[in-house]
Length: 189
Image (cartoon, rainbow, N blue to C red; front, side, top):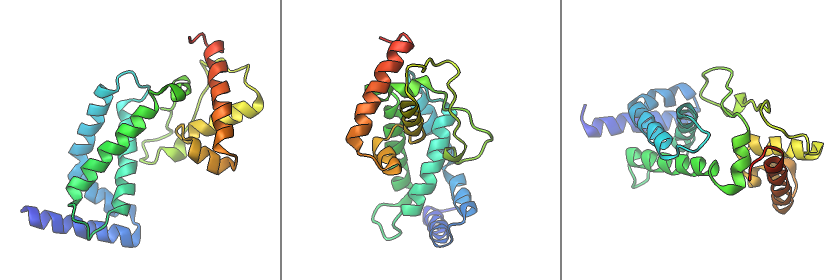
């Protein structure tokens, strides 16, 4: 198949997906990019070795972002879809992986974010957080609830603030105290 035919086929898939929202269409399109998604996932796993994320976490996140980026793609754009999807997937996954390495997100390392009930592509709906190995007794109930909400929102203060309808500054203050307590209780210096 020639490149022009391939781009025309992909453009047709994108247009149908954007008009109907049928997820099966984007999975057909994804077949052309499966190798790229696997390669990016493996690269991220090697690049961010100290991250608590696994290959499966990167793969799931890339599938999710592939769908979201395809939904937002402008068919009249100067940038061709293959360049667009690769560029933005690498940017999205790099930003996501860095969240788990920064000092302000160290509390993410305390939770097990890899417990998915099945092999579905949408991991947010199936996210289960366990505290089996964490000593979090010194946290108040309010802090425990906030901690869970921050974890559910991938450490995003902005998302947590919108969901809980409290100022970001308040969340930052509580998050700092939560991290201090968790570090102290779990022997992290």
